[in-house]
Image 1 (cartoon, helix red, strand yellow):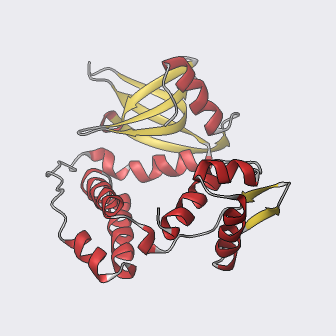
Image 2 (cartoon, rainbow, N blue to C red):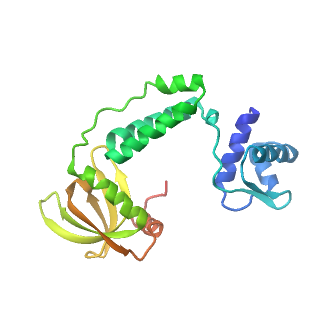
Image 3 (cartoon, rainbow, N blue to C red):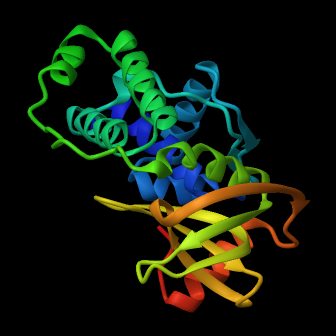
Length: 229
C-alpha cells in the first residue's frame, strides 16, 4: 500500500468514529506500527486535518477537513459522474443545476489525467421526463424538511380521491419515474407515503413539528424494517 493511500484510509477510519480511537486500534486496522501511525497523524495535521488527541488517549477527527482531489480514484470519479448525471436528469431544476455545478467544480481542480477520465466516461444516463407539475413543489418540500416545518397539502390519490392533510415531511425518496414524500400524517396519526406528482397544492406552516426529522426517520425505518443506509 502506498503512503498516500494509507493516509486516505486513516482519514476514512477516523471519520467513521465519533469518539476517540486509540493509536493501537488504528495501527492494527491499517496493519502498520504505532510509530508509523504517529508519523502519519502528524503529516495529516500538517496538511490541515483537525485531529485532536495524543498517544495513550486516542485520536478524533473534527469535521471540516477536505481531501485533495487527487485522492479520488478513477472508479470514485466515475461514481461521482454517474451520480451527478442521474441527479441532473431526474430531479427538479434547483437540484439539477447544483449537480452540474458540483461536477464542474470537481473537473476544474482535477489533475489532467483524471479530468480526461471524467470527461470521457462511458457511463451514461438515459433521458427522463421531468415535465411533471411536482417539479415546482420539490424545492419547497426539501426546504420544509430541512427546517422541520409542517406543511398542508391537497392530495389526489391514484383512485382520483382528493383530501387535505397536515403532514410532517422528513424524507424524499427518488425513484426512476416518481418521487415519494415520506411524512407523518396528523389526520391518520401514522406514517404515510405521498407521490409528489399527486400533490395538487402545498402550503408551508410556520410551526415546527414536535419531533426532529432524524428521529422520525429512525421510527419510520424501524416500522418498515429498513436498514439505515
